[in-house]
Image 1 (cartoon, helix red, strand yellow):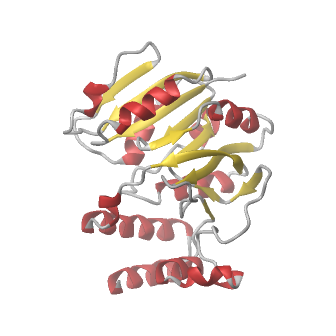
Image 2 (image 1 turned 60 degrees about the vertical axis):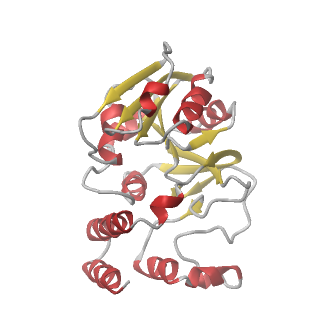
Image 3 (image 1 turned 180 degrees about the horizontal axis):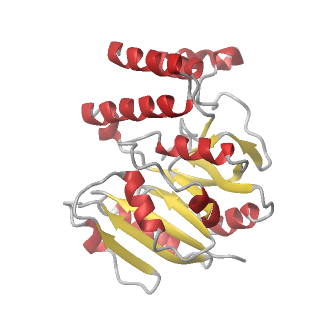
Length: 268
């Protein structure tokens, strides 16, 4: 079986970083774990014990998630890359399952899994599709909550749909756990570092599909994502997310859609 390089971008994750790193170090298919620190102030990197498979890199500032993912990827040696959030814990044995499935077809480029909350419920962005103007409006106005009654209200997120039991193709997966073939990541030039925060994963998925590759979701594998509560109400994070959304629509959608998204963001 081919190996996998795990890339984790850390920023003040605290003791949870240790749990996440140790969980992937124990996986036999993981050849190396690359942790890139974005100038954390909580000394979380010092908590990591030395390990022959662990490689630590430090940035002098915080250039953002996309930039540090690309930075870590340049040191990776394996055939596949696993971009894993520092607050996302994948079950033992799952990496091998994902690797096996990813290598079955040459067209397959990315694979993800089910992402759950601490209570075991499905996380909101675990199943989703690429944004369009209408989908974005339904999501950000809350109309998609009615999708359980009629699919016509469905926005970006697809949690209302019954979960398929088999591995299947999708438009997008959760950004908390992204396994991608290294050669594909290089071919599409990695993450777009111009995204300040959020939407860099959706941009990666869009360019992957545009290049003719497939994205897979494995419903039989799951990971627990301790999504930060503070960032959800942080005004600065909300502002950066809006900028990320505007960049996505400017790059991949019509001028009309882009201008309408800018207008909607100003009205929110």
